[in-house]
Amino acid sequence: MKRAMSRGEVEYRIEYAIQRRLPGEDDFTEVGFGSSGAWGGVDEALYAAGSDVQNRLWETEPGMPDPDELEHV
Image 1: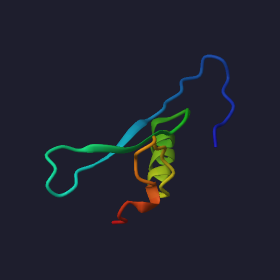
Image 2: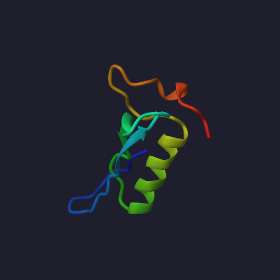
Image 3: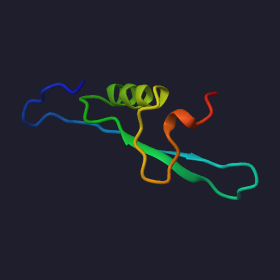
Image 4: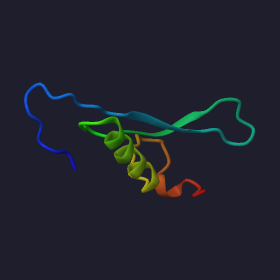
């Protein structure tokens, strides 16, 4: 959850892409993307991004597989 910021305070955000390469393919294809939102520290942003990835809460565009359809490791 994003906290209220005072004027002049530094914010950090991690943007990420989820890519996969299927057997027989030469290159990776994007299957999702997201952002941690804005946080007051790198560690907080990393935790938020990691939590979204672990819980499969990233965004997709038409044609991308549903996050829950991807193989769990």
